[in-house]
Structures are given as C-alpha cells and as structure tokens.
Amino acid sequence: MSPITTSLFELFTIGPGPSSSHTIGPMRAGYDFRTELASLNTSDMDGVPARVRTVLYGSLAATGEGHGTQWAVLAGLGGMRPENCPTDVLDSLPEENPEYEIPLGGAVTKTSRQDITSDTLRVLDLEHPNTLVFQLIDADGKVLHEAEYQSIGGGSIRRPDAPAPHVADVPHDYGTMRQLRALLQAGNGLTLDQIIIQNECALTGASEDGVLAGLETVLAAMEDAVHRGLAAEGELPGPLGLYRKAKAMFKRFRKTPLASAQLMLALDAYALAAAEENAAGHTVVTAPTCGSAGVLPSIAHVMKYQMKLPQDALRRGLCAAAAVGLLVRHNASVAGAEVGCQGEVGVAASMAAAMLAMGRGYTMHVVENAAESALEHHLGLTCDPVAGYVQIPCIERNAMGAVKAFNAFVIASSEVEQHHMVGFDQAVIAMAETGHDMNRKYKETALGGLAASMVNC
Ligand code: SF4
Image (cartoon, rainbow, N blue to C red; front, side, top):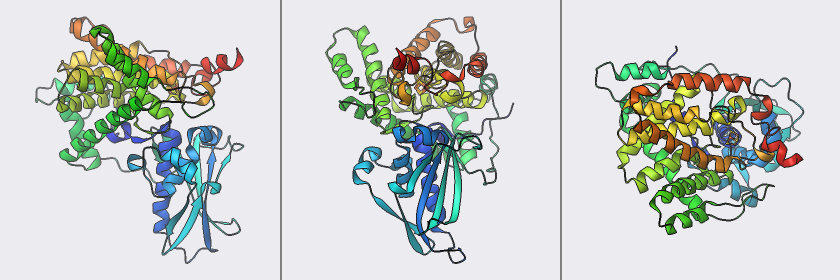
C-alpha cells in the first residue's frame, strides 16, 4: 500500500462555496494563470495582446452559472485567492461587474465577466469533466497564448501539460487505518497528531509551528462560517427559494430549558449555519468537501462552546479528522460525483466522530470505532441535489451528519473497545464498492432521487 502524500491543507481548503470544484478550483486556476502572465515574454508573440478570454467546459459549463464559477474565475484572474478573498466575493462581484487589469510581462492586459464563456457542446474529448481554458488574445480574438486547467476536486487543480510534481518522502508510512494503528502501537511514544504534523512538515517543507498555525487558521475559518450563518437570515440564492433556518434554530436552542434537547439543537443550528453559508457562496472549509462543510464545524463548535474543551484538544481532534479524511481520499473517494453522498456527508461525519473522540481524550481504538460507526451508517447514501444546487437535501443533511457523528462517538465511547466488530478500513472498502456500483443517476447528476421526484411529482 502506497503511503499518504496529500497535504492536510489540500483536504482542508478555505474558500467560497458552494462547490470546491466549481468555485475554489476555478478561482485558484484564474490566479495561477494571472501569475503566469506576469512573467510571460510578449516580444515574440504573433500579435498584440488585448484581453484574457476564459472558456468553461463540461460540468463547469453546465452548472457553473448556478455555482458562481464565472465570478470565481474572474476573482482569481483579478488577483484574489480562495483562502483570503472577501467572504462575500461571489455576492459583490455581480453588482460591481469589474474589469480587471492583469500584469503581462512589462505591460498590462484586461478581462471582465464578458470575456468568460461556457461551451456545453464539447464533452466527449474532455480528459476531465471540470475543464477550463484561459486564452490571451489579440483585438481580433486570435489566441497568442493559452493554458488548460482541470478542477480535480476539493479545490485542487491540475494542468495537463505540467510534469507530475515531486512528492517528498514522509517519515511515517501508512496507507490504511491498520497501518496507522501499528505505527501508534510501535512503542516509540508517537501520538496521532505528531504523526500527522511530522508528515505534513516533510511533505510541504513547513515548520511545525507553521503547520500548527495552519490548523488554527482552519479552525478559525470553520468557526467564522458558523458565526456568520447564525447571524444571517432570508432566502438563499438560486431558483429553489429556500430560506435559511440556522438563526431560528439557534434562538430556539437559547430558549429551551431541556439540557438533553439543547445539545441536539446546538448541533443542528451550527451545522445548518455553516452549510447555509456554503449554499450562499460564502467562505467555508472543505471538510472534506464544500457540500459537507457544516458537519465538522458543528462538532468543533460544540466541543468549544458546550463542552468547553481547550484549543489544543480541538487541534488534536482536527488531526484525527484529517487522518480519517486522508485515508478515505487515499483508498476510496470523497467526491459525490464518484461515490455519492456517503463520500461527502458520510465521510464528514466519520471525520467529526474521530475529532470528538480524540478531543475528548479517548484511545485510538475509540477514535477508529467512532469514525467507522459514523461511516458505516452512511453507506449507500446517494447524491441527489435538487436542481443541481447544494441546498436540498445538502443543508439539512449536514445537520443529520453532525448528529450521527455525535451518536457514533457516544456508542464507541460506551462499548468495550474490543467488542467493536467492523474495522474502519472495511467500512472504507464497502463505501468504495457501493459507490462503484451506484447508478450514475445518484452521483451528483441531479437526475435521480429527490432531484427527480421534486421536479416530476
Ligand atoms: S447530496 Fe450531493 S451535493 Fe449535496 S452534500 Fe451530498 S454529495 Fe454534496
């Protein structure tokens, strides 16, 4: 089994929702092309550069308008990056409709929303369903320089013409939960968070302090999404006319006298808040995706505000969540388009259950059992976003995922560890197989399930 060589911060990407493939990836691609243009030699070009044109293909062309892809691309070309752009950038750009200047060698070129088009006809020869092409053109539209990008999921991008990146060796070699457990039992005193952080340092060249600071940034971005969502109300963008619920739920949480009901209301309100922020196209953290970006923040918020756990418990918990998310990415998938919602909300719940168990100081067995239980009870969950918007069933599904994550932790921390029958790796294999066999209708095509019944019935 090959070792995991994915960075934590590829798993936890900060940026505007509602879809990491349709907003974060394209914005990153726009920024990357802008950077390339700045150092381009224009003297031997067969024409005078005038503008930058962008063409969206495949799924970006089909559903990009609803997801704000065009504005995300424009923001990237304008010099914004997902991790530090204004949280409401996808709201404000359509109002401002700016024309951006882009540094080009020693000169400047320009682009605006009118330069971004969608080609829904070119489908069959696409190497990847989420493809976009940037072209530097002259005043007559002749292409002087171009670059193709693919938005390959989770906000990551790839250039088909680029050589494969060099991947550094990691000090702790594991590709399954079983191997990770063996490392922890090897007797060298290493903890799970140390393994995760040391591997991250080796992969990225960051210092330990740098990785810790990055984890704090991720936690802060999750908390911010919950706070913003709890304060917001009104209708979400898109044709469904769906209203936000988190604020009302939070009010009810504050008024309820029942301690037992309070926890459920808090989990629901926090998860809805972050998921509604995602649906609004505001900044969230992929955990593991934008569509499931409410589950982990909900559990983290409960750990901080209801359980009053210290910040280092949250940080250690986030490392456990990362281990779970990275293992699933490595051995199966976290993309709804590949395995259905079991890979998004199911994996988010699994990560959240592990985070809670680790943050509460339980053993690695309990962490694994909690993660397994949460994933096991999402097996077979389909992806059927109504009208292609990440709203129904996605937003409430995040609340369901948070509650299931909590329950998985409760069961795992109450049972005799050794009596837990199903291993995490076994649940991941089952998820991959189920996803493979799942009809295409139920894998982010908006052709089956609720997406069909709400239109046809
Ligand atoms: S239903 Fe599909 S789009 Fe919605 S959260 Fe689940 S996987 Fe994502």
